[in-house]
Length: 342
Image 1 (tube, rainbow, N blue to C red):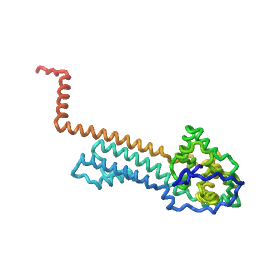
Image 2: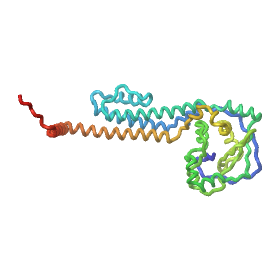
Image 3: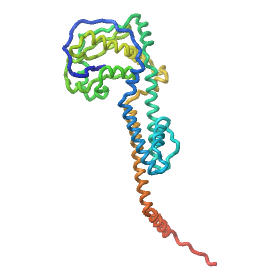
C-alpha cells in the first residue's frame, strides 16, 4: 500500500535515510470509534449529490403533476411520494399519465438497487469492523507483541518503477485518488477493501523519482508483511514510523492481511456460502444504477412530450379530423353490402 499524507507540500520529501534494521514494539490495538465510521461512510459530498438528485426528481414529478391536475397538486404531497419511493419504493396513488408511470417505475428500480447494494454493504461495514478480539487472538497465538522491522537495504523504488514502466496495465489494477494517507487507512479499514493507493499527482510530477519510497516489515510468528510509506521533509523519522505503525495496528490491518492469506489457502468448497456470495461495493454498481435511472427519465420525458403534443393537437381538432378521415377511408375500403330483394 503506497500512501501520502502531505497536504500543504505534497512533493516536499526529505533526504534518504540509511541505517541497519530498526525494531520496535507495536502499541496495543484500539477499537474504531463510531463517529469515525460515520465520517468515512456518510460523506458530505455523497449526501449532497443524493439530495440534489432527489430535489431534481421532486421538481420533475411536481411539474408533471401540475400538467395532470393543477388544482389538486401539492408540493408537499409530491415530496412525500418521492421520499416514499426512495425508502420503500411505493406511492399512495398510481399516476394516471403514462410518462409519470414510466418515471415512477424506473425511479423505483433505482431505489431498490441502491437499497439492496449500498445498505447491505453499509450494514456489513458497521457490523464487522471490530478488530480487538481478532488482534488479541493473533497476539495470543504469537505469544508476544507484533514487531515492526524497518529495513533500508531493500529495493526502495520497485513498486513506483513498476507503475511508471507498466502504466497502461498497472493503472487498471490500481486505485488513484487525491486523498490523505489517514483517509485511505480509515476507508480501507472500514470497507475491508484490498488495493494499492497512489497519488495521481505524484506519478505526474515525479514519474521516475527513485527516492520517494521507504519500507518496513510487519512481522508475526507466521509471516511478514511488506508495507510502503512516504516520509515528509523535516519530520522526525522515529515519530513517523511509530505513528503509521500505530495506525496500521489500531485499524486492524495486520489481522486483515492475516485473515486474507489464511482464507486464500482454503479450498473453495469449504468456504461458507456467505463468503462465496459476498459482493464488494464498487463504483460500477452506482454507475449501472444511474444508467437505468437516466434511461427511464429519458423514456418518460419523450413520452411526456408525445402526450403534450397529442393534447395540443386534440384541442385544435386535428386528432378528431384524422380519426374522421381514417374512418371514412376504412368505409371506402369495405365492399358494398347487397340488399336482398323482398
